[in-house]
Image 1: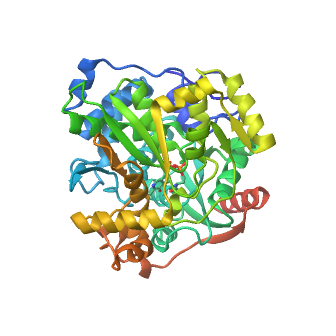
Image 2: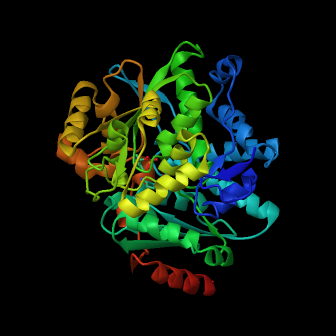
Length: 461
Ligand SMILES: Cc1ncc(COP(=O)(O)O)c(C=O)c1O
Ligand SMILES: N[C@@H](CCOP(=O)(O)O)C(=O)O
């Protein structure tokens, strides 16, 4: 299996190179050259596998020998050993509503599913093939702590993690800034998540800088993130359907950077019986407007009660355009040029029909989010995190739906308090964080300043 750029300006590369490269050298995103279809028999067999064994089988199709099978198995087993639930990502019944709990990892958010694996994969590849990696990432709260946890203290790796100052929850901030390992560097950027993400892309697009400092990516621009996230869609389908190929399910997915729901889209393309993928957004509804009108138009970023989704520029949308346009990079480039020039891009009626063949989209306001948390708690005692509540409000009424629970509610207790007048109890990974010492630097949202900081920091170690 080879990987190509969505913008077509690169020769195909293998899995290991794609993982270490992060962003393609032409500024595009790396995608597999084809999506393998799986047979009904394979799906039936997969449906009874434990999570780790399913991960091995699914990933093998895309890793394609770049990591020998015993090593891949070992990486997977070690990555999910830190999860608190034996099923890793269980599907639970909440008063008739199916919830796919993705928050049993060490930082209590769905990012752990991919980032504990990616941290171990980076360490494995660097140890095997030599070299060092300086990770540069942007976070609206959850990617940061999961990535930091995944690589803290690991030899050959440093991490520079940018979060928008004052726009992540207090616990999320502490989860990152209380990690004092010498290879962890937290930066609070004066601006929004989009500013932080733009800075990261600017650094990756400065190819001499990228190569001099061996930059690595932990955001969902890294293909391995998407790959690891594909596993739980198949696992959840298997749990609910018992492997019956006639038993289709839909997924409601709280969406910001389009990474999570894009993983679901790929799984659907592989032949897993998925009826609808519901894109659930908060007031930052650029993706919902796209599905409903065919126009992807940038606006301003609003702060909401589901802050991890306060995003305008959904980085994986480019990967989706590539597949929507049947792998024609010139069409992707043409639309991205329009987006740069006019702050909007549009797809034609036939493409929009294809979008709607796979996706529904619903935007959920803060009052609706609070009402959903309140209502679910009232009927079941179960507390939804505000992002999960957006997904439940958007898709929970469908009979075939599985709602993705993307974070533990205690990460967002200000919103939980507003909804139900009490906090969600802190699970073990979140206890005691507010008493720990912290380290974090504040910087302007400026690429030159960030580069200088990385240069100085790396020169001093
Ligand atoms: C809790 C939570 N829910 C949902 C999302 C949105 O996921 P994605 O950016 O992959 O669409 C995020 C951030 O990515 C998140 O942290
Ligand atoms: N919501 C995310 C934003 C970054 O998204 P990613 O999936 O591209 O890493 C976060 O929690 O940081």
